[in-house]
Length: 217
Image (cartoon, rainbow, N blue to C red; front, side, top):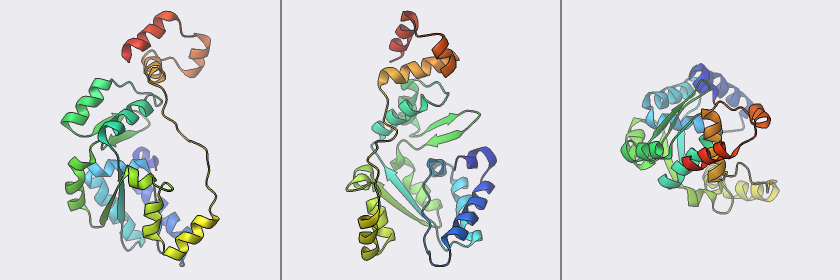
């Protein structure tokens, strides 16, 4: 879904057409998950364009599903994750964006994200702009039992859901764990100093650089 940002919303039309073709006549629901859709919560024009594309391709309705988490925890998570993606952020800047705007804009040559850190601020205007339904789950409800179970129960009949849960294979791997605060600051400092992964191996962290990373935290 990142190609929406690189090539424009028209690329989504091609993707939706492909999804509809693969779904076939016996499928009445296609579930799409992508963090790039989050931009639409703030960028209402994008939300409208996505709905129009979906209807033009033949989908009868669009249901928007938002998983809302604690705004401070989400801001901390985004701050940590962005340290891996070639940008330089300050905790104070993220905190100020959360307080004043409720969202955070982060752009590079690869992406242009709008993180809706405080979804409550945008929920009603987002809902009002949609032709489709808006469904909201708290993070706690969404991850209870199995992540996404509450949504699958909505989309499937009870018997089909039970069959799915009985036959599905679930990975026990913990993916994309949040890195330590020290590692986060080292990542940001490395980006600021233009130290690529290769350069980090050639020029090991010396005490002065390590101190600078500590001062950022």
